[in-house]
Image (cartoon, rainbow, N blue to C red; front, side):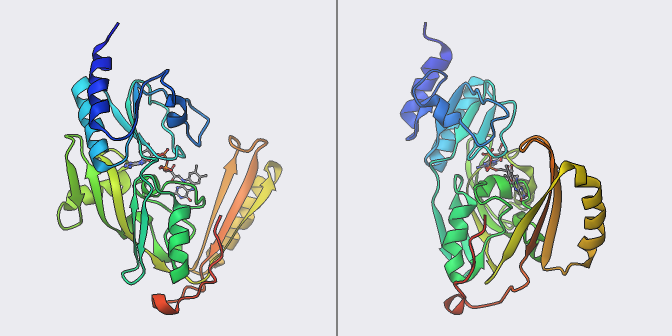
Amino acid sequence: MTTMLDTTTTELDATVAGPVLEPGDPGYAEEVASFSLTFAATPAVVVGATSAADVAAAVRFAARTGRRVAVQSTGHGLQSDLAGTVLVSTRRMTAVSVDPYAATACVQAGARWRQVIDAAAPYGLAPLNGSSSQVGVVGYTVGGGLGPMARRFGFAADHVRRLTLVTADGAIRDVTAKSDPDLFWAVRGGKSTFGIVTDLEFGLMPVARFYGGCVVFPAEATAAVLHAWREWAPTLSDDTTTSVASDTSIFPPARCFIDCFNASEVALLPPQTASAEMPRMM
Ligand SMILES: Cc1cc2nc3c(=O)[nH]c(=O)nc-3n(C[C@H](O)[C@H](O)[C@H](O)COP(=O)(O)OP(=O)(O)OC[C@H]3O[C@@H](n4cnc5c(N)ncnc54)[C@H](O)[C@@H]3O)c2cc1C
C-alpha cells in the first residue's frame, strides 16, 4: 500500500542531495545511531543533509506532512522523543576552517570540537569547547557551552559572530547581532527551538598552553570530596576552572569526579609567533 508519507518522501528524495531513509530502509539504523544508548531514536524519516538547502527541504517537508522536525549531529544530547519526527542528520556537514589573523573559526553543523582544536592549535588559538572533544560544536554552542576555560573566557555562545539558520518556514537566514538581534540572542542558548543552524562562525581564544585533568573518587568518598572541594575552589585563580560531578548512570558503580583545568599560561601572541606546544585536549 502506498501511503501519503511514501509519496511525499519520494518527492523529498528527489529534492535533497543526501539520503532520505524510513524505518526498515538499509542505512536507517546507522543514520539514527547516536553516542547515547539511553534511548533508541525512531523518527518517521531521517534526512542525511549535505547542505543548508537539504535542511530547508526537510523542514518544509515536515511542515507539509504535519510532523515535528528534530536535528542530530553526534547524539551526545539525544532527545527521548524523536518518535514520528522528521530527523535532520547533519553528520555529513563537517567542514571546518580557521582564520588565524581574525582568530575565528567557521564550521558546518556536523563538525566536532576535535576538528576545531586541531585546526586552531598550530596558531596558538583554541576554541571554547567542553570536556569532550567528540561533542558537536553547534549543539554545544546553541546550549550556551560552558567549558574548561569558562572562568577565563565565558560561555562559547557569547563568542559567536554569525550563523546560518533554517527557520520553521523553511527559509535560510544569515543571522548576526546586527541583522536580527532578537533571533541572534535567542538561538545562543535556545538550542534548536528557533531553527536548525547550518553553519556557525565564532571567535578563537589565544591559548598557548593548557593543563587539564580529572580526579575520580569512589562513591563512598562523595561527602568528604564535596566538603574539601568547597574549601579549595574559591582559592583558585580566575584562570582555573573546576567542576564536580557525581555519576551513577554512565559509569556504575557510582563515582565522584573533580575536573580541574588551568589556562593560566594564556598568552596574547600574534598567529605567526604562536607556540605550537599546545597539548592535545581529551
Ligand atoms: C561526554 C559529554 C561531555 C559534555 N561536556 C560538556 C561541557 O563540558 N560543557 C557543556 O556545556 N556541555 C557539555 N556536554 C553537553 C553537550 O554540550 C550537549 O549535550 C550538546 O547538545 C551536544 O550536542 P551534539 O550536537 O554533540 O549532540 P546531538 O545529540 O547531536 O544534539 C543535541 C541537541 O543539540 C541541538 N542541536 C544539534 N545540532 C543542531 C543544529 N544544527 N542546530 C540547532 N540545534 C542543534 C538540538 O537541540 C539537539 O537535540 C557534554 C555532553 C557529553 C555527552
